[in-house]
Length: 298
Image (tube, rainbow, N blue to C red; front, top):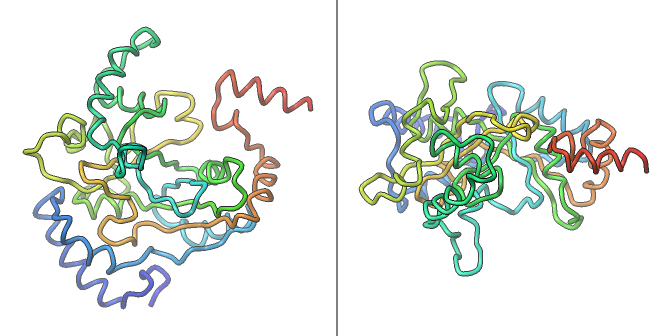
């Protein structure tokens, strides 16, 4: 078995069921699915690589060479290794055990109602409004990713929790989109909001339409229309009407994890500081600039 073969599954077995499934996608386009039949597909394949524990930035770079050197890879840092890859609207809050999934469109309308007075430029379409909501931590089905592994590591090490392992998730966005039925003509041609019309089926008013099909999560790029998005090399995945974590899409061989043990968090934070990573680098705004300046003179 090669190192790219998903663990726990014979190589021939993977090729057999996946090739049969893949050939069907070419004919149908975006996949419509029956959630009751996803159990086999989720359990048939494990993550692309076993979890790798990271004890230093040097080890982090070594594991990137081992797992993320070929092809397009995106990254997401989370301070708790146990958290699934779900957008904020799908996370449990009081009164909503599966998250306020049906509140995105009402929230978007209210955001539009009151945001104009604070904006130098009005968003041109609903996608730009949704990106703006995401930027300010509003309720959306977007999940933030980055093309920079060090930015993801920085976010994984955020917060004061030193008792819980952190994680940098790695995603093959092309593999995710292929599973979701979006095969592209050109290598590394990723879906783009505002350009690829197939993504309009993920708009809040379409997701709430009972006549529409349930679709799988996809990976897409959008305009980097803020200094923060540029600094963070931001990208996205987006969920449809079904609450589904990115790692649960038709087997898990499109994702893998680099885990930071809790007792190594302090060490890795210090190493990132030596590399010049700080709040101002990731959030280039006046408030973080002022705080960074204060730190320089301590």
